[in-house]
Amino acid sequence: MNVVLYQPEIPQNTGNIARTCALTNTKLHLIKPLGFSLDEKHLKRAGLDYWDLLDLAVYDDFEDFLDKNPDPEIYVLTTHAKAFYSDIEYTGDAYLLFGRETAGLPDEIHSAYPDHRFRIPMRNHERARSLNLSNSVNIVLYEALRQLGFPELI
Image 1 (tube, helix red, strand yellow):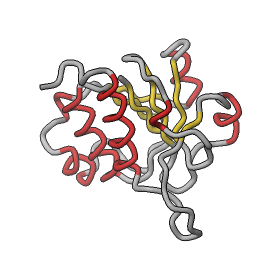
Image 2 (cartoon, rainbow, N blue to C red):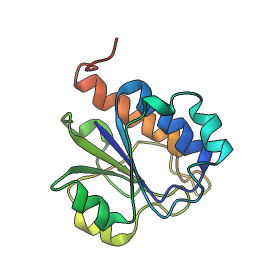
Image 3 (cartoon, rainbow, N blue to C red):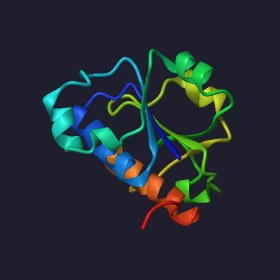
């Protein structure tokens, strides 16, 4: 399983996601530019002492990610989709793609995957735009792992 963060901005979110990925044997892919340094103390603190357990890849941009991961089975998680994340039939090599905390994903990525866009259901309110990124990753990742029978986890 793979979690892909497109230009993440908040180090604590990425640290929390890194910790989840380390403990679920999920590869974490970070697409630059990042809104922080990978050496930042808030990032390290949120990930605690799990960094050595993490399978991490960092890419210069989305094209670099695609070059190094040919033909990935990408599922775009967005508040702009109609289908739910629970509608996906996950495979073990799926790539769960999440956008920036403040701006989501650019239109060209949405356009490239029109049939692979999914959302987490939540109330419709002008001030309630989306869940926290690390919470969203956890919700979707654990559904994928549940469908796969929690491989390699006890």
